[in-house]
Image (cartoon, rainbow over all chains, first blue to last red; front, side, top):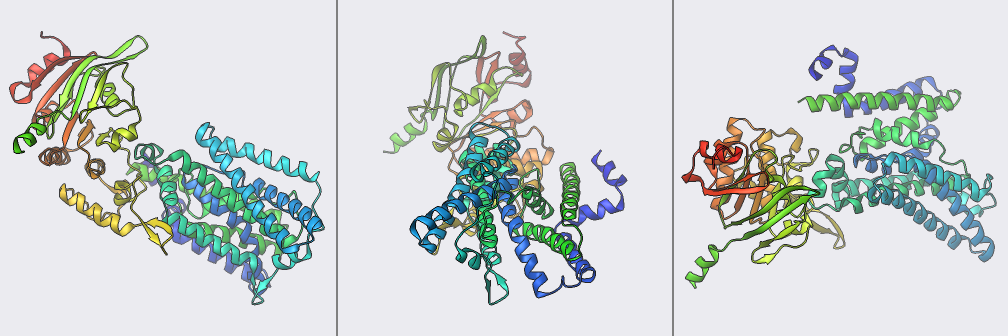
Amino acid sequence: MADDQEKTASPFVAVLVGASKQWILLILIAFFAFFSLAAPGFFSVLGVTNIAVYTAEPLLLALGETFVIISGGIDLSVGALLGFTGVVSALLMKALWLSTHNVTPSILISAVAGLGVGTALGAINGLLIAKLKVPPFVVTLGMLGIARGCTFILTAGHSIIGLPEVLGIVGNYYIFGFLPISALITVMLVLLACFILAKTRLGRYTYSIGGSRQASIRSGVPVDGYTIRIYALSGFMAAWAGILILARFSTGSPLAGQNSELNSIAAAVIGGTSLMGGIGTIPGTVVGALIVGVLLVGLVIMNVQPYWQMVSVGGILILAVFIDNIRYRRGNAE
Amino acid sequence: MRERRSDMDRQAILKVESICKYFGGNHAVQDVSFEIYPGEVVGLIGDNGAGKSTLIKMIAGVHRPTRGSISWMGKKLEETNPREVRDRGIETIYQDLALADNLRVSSNLFLGREQMKKLLGIIEILDEKTMLSQAKEILSRLDIQIPDLRTTVRDLSGGQRQSIAIGKAIFWEAKLLIMDEPTAALGVIERANILNLIKKLRDQGVSVILISHNLTDVFEVTDRLIVLRRGVKIRELLTRETSESELVQLMIGSAN
């Protein structure tokens, strides 16, 4: 039956399916070439720097999302965790700074606290999924509401301003004049994610749980514990994104990270992570996130309303999942 | 000294005594007793619903017996935790094999018990090289031929997958291997390979409990047979002293 489907599928679909990994890179290059020609100023140091800055946030969220999706789950709460950790850090920073007048310790302590809060909320996601057996979709959708709601409650809906000036200077610092500090930190976290996924037990079990939860349990993998760690890692990455955005704008906005679950899931899935679980890579996700970032910056430079970026990413996401489904069916037919 | 050794060899490694399992009013297993000795293949046969699965799940620690006891190496197995049972040397291979299709052969063999090494003296990382070479060693000891251990299990044939599941089970020095219908989905050649593998395990001193509907398999590879019917042990007999027609009659209960 699957054979029939293959034969009747249009050449266009066949090309897309056969395409997979390398083609995603080609699509990125095609987008890049298109905007270089269509949007004057896109292909410049500033343009490329902007892509790096605008890719950082979806990419950080997508790193954690990649682990979660490989393990067979989904994390819809990443954007809300980003917003919550940013605001918690901002409030703490302001309080510490005003009471102690020590700038550096205030910034560092509140950043570390933010990372802790994000990781803890991620771990709670994992705990509910592993122990109460509530589906990941429901748990993280609930967490999205809880974290975003608490963000608005804590701030009464207003942005937190009056943070130390140093924060904005550090957050917008360009190393050697062209490498944004947020890009550098993102690169380091990408390398960390690559390392964890390829070299550690956590990475191995992320794949095995997504490949076969039953096989993992029977083989003695502590599946519950690792599920908690995987969602905690997602929360940790979301918290980094929250802190980098807080530093860049020097303002704790309760709106930060709204709708970014779309970008992060899209980046992971476009990059070849399968929603069926068990399959995905960090380099793929990096390329996926770059496609999302290139679209955003390219459309802005072309003076197109940036909302079109959401429209296009949404479209590409559906297309990517469609292709993944066909690949999955084809794999099963063998 | 030598005498004592042969004495120990003749001692049962597994002793099941008057074991019962009731699910509500359903007597799935009723008062079954048997023993397993080192290096023998014992067939557990019976029609559907005879209680074979329930029986092996009690040995594997999945179900707790309602009554009766199971002893392993002279000690009572009282925990119902499958992991502890496995750690003591009883491995069970179910029909769904419990392999992660997306992982390599070597990763599957070591799943849950990865070999680690230290990076920079502090960080624990997976030691793929050691795992690959150890995997190669065990598979060649069992004559299991997989050209490249970096192949994902998804890309293997049914027989190869079954071999990997067996290799994985005995990798960790299992003394007793329980197999549920290992040849059910296999072609002729692969079936022969698996049966040879079972004989090889027996020759290496591993005991095997084999559940099979295929009486040809049973006659080819087992030493002894335990026949179950509706949860009760009907008969225990030596394979070489029975015939296919006698077994069928025992299983369906038309002779007594």
